[in-house]
Length: 152
Image (cartoon, rainbow, N blue to C red; front, side, top):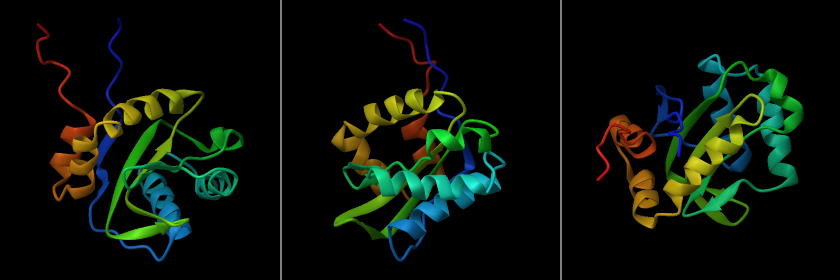
């Protein structure tokens, strides 16, 4: 089975002490970080909000994965994710979200990114570690485990 490339996580895209008054502000913050990284045009933020209005990106375990609609693919310059931690939590349609993982992907790259994130989040211990991370290096280690470890 072919190895997949690690999630494209730039350390500058990890923000561990964010605040937001609600779901839309949290999504907007994710989009702003993706814009800062040069991954997307500013119009992608509206597409992220539009996606959320059509279907919730809350995935459980205190995590949401906001991303844009298919129409917004042209606003994506390169695949990227950002990880924003909200220590005070964000009300997400009645759920408490502590971590937002914003995704921008060209083509169908978001499917791979969502699949990799799902594998991490399906492990309650890893999801908890992500929610409680206080160091950027911890987040990167969780989302980009070393792929050089020997398999026995």
